[in-house]
Image (cartoon, rainbow, N blue to C red; front, top):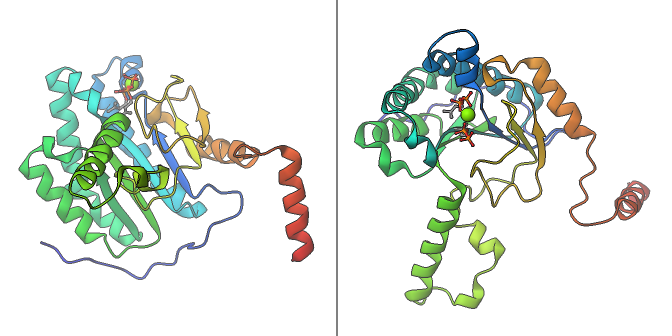
Length: 263
Ligand code: IPE
Ligand code: IPE
Ligand code: MG
């Protein structure tokens, strides 16, 4: 197995005011992009891979700490076998060919989801790719593959039930924080900004626990067309949001004024 590699990169390490620490994306619209051009759906997925490279670079440039991309949902197995096969080939090619660029740019890669279904070859490639980038600390890229939010909550419950059965924890010790630590996203802050391209206004079983207080940005732009300007628009929309987390606007203003007074 390849050892971890870490080039010396210059990157933004601290949270940047007004910039989301964690951006989570549903990259939707590849099929329609291709159909609009009379091309096969897989052409859309290939073109979509270019937008993946673009958003990784843009997030790094802006100081986003975590980028989580939905590449393949638990439900996407229901697609025609040919499309599933081609998507798997694309996934393998990303794992084999795109890791050098991640290493060069200080990006740590993690794949999350129910990975057993992918088989041994992809399993080995995932481990190798993750290992090569494990020391990188400019940004973490998490790819959700065979991922479903309900699956994630269910597997967390199974772990907790097992711990309760063995006496490691008491059932009444289970709280939100403990459950969150058993999700596959444990250790990653909840997304601040969610982006869905392709016009649909739904979550499609993505990060359903973690998106509880996330700002949701929907755009009609199809994923292969999602440009630097579109990302800038999402960021500027995010910066204009007042995140109240249940409080009132007045309380937030008072807190801000108090903090400014102490500074
Ligand atoms: C998203 O694009 C990519 C995956 C689900 C893998 P789609 O393939 O869903 O594109 P549309 O929604 O059919 O246009
Ligand atoms: C969500 O897109 C999954 C991914 C982008 C990987 P879909 O295109 O599968 O979502 P639905 O089926 O339209 O909700
Ligand atoms: Mg779709």
